[in-house]
Image: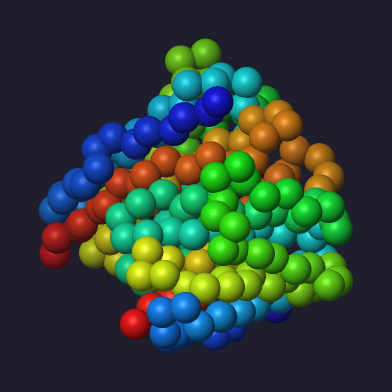
Length: 114
Length: 111
């Protein structure tokens, strides 16, 4: 089935140790998003790619970076995780065309920072 | 800038009751509005998408309506079941912007 896949589902890292989260999609969607969601809060958009055009939100910390090497894959790099970066990280995709800009989400990666 | 709110923040109902969840947005020039369900510790599952030209969408026991002029969308759940217990989020998409999420309504359906 076409879907959005995130790996790993759970990630534990140490304070300051770089970590990479991955997302892949079989939907062939042009747009990919990374969201951060903390407990009982709305998802907060970090980045999005419109094809290969990268867009980061103004308030996304410099500690976060992203790569999209091809249509199917997108990575979120956290260079020096702090305790405040512990959260659920959600990847989503969206088709470009028409009014059906529906978002499709992966299962998320739960990041714990020790 | 679009802002999305959801009321109530939490809701507890007995099984079998019909219920309405509310979503309000400040900028009525939306492209579409999407409702999601999120189970604890999980990703978001899309429930319904309403395009700006539509007034409602239905899927099974769910019905979502959209009133752009008043800046409101409602999600109606008929004959609620314990399996409906989850957090329900709405997200609005405006022209030239990204999706903006509401904080969600946490629903508990008691057996």
